[in-house]
Image 1 (cartoon, rainbow, N blue to C red):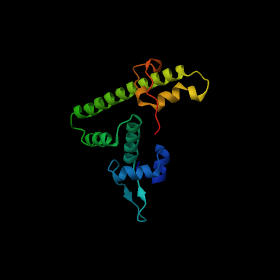
Image 2 (image 1 turned 90 degrees about the vertical axis):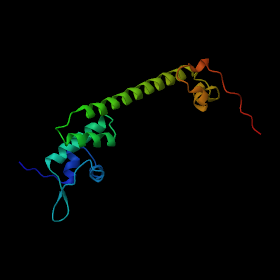
Image 3 (image 1 turned 180 degrees about the vertical axis):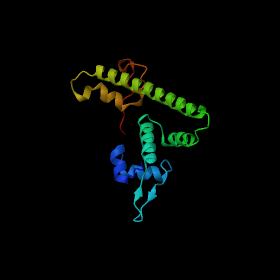
Length: 154
């Protein structure tokens, strides 16, 4: 069966925006589709499959450049997959590093919230911590940190 899709149908089926599909064509992630005599794009199942691949890769956090590399490799299926493995392993390390940073941020936010007395804003440890980069060390509780010197106005 030779199914043909308009750009609107592609967008609906893939849960993408028309502008995104055009952008992916522009940067070479999606091959240019055929055109009707009226210059409308006509997509095939291969386009839809490739768009699904791109969307899934984006959901996993791969960059457009990484996706472009993987797609180029997938277009030549006879190659060994070591390069794809390497891209995926590098990405996994980036994801794990991001998770560690987010967990650290979560611990810092919890410490800041635990220091809040709930009284007046003038005594708010959260505002104090957010106002000074010195307080942004997630390895040390807010309560153990020395306050900055008072601000002197001229």
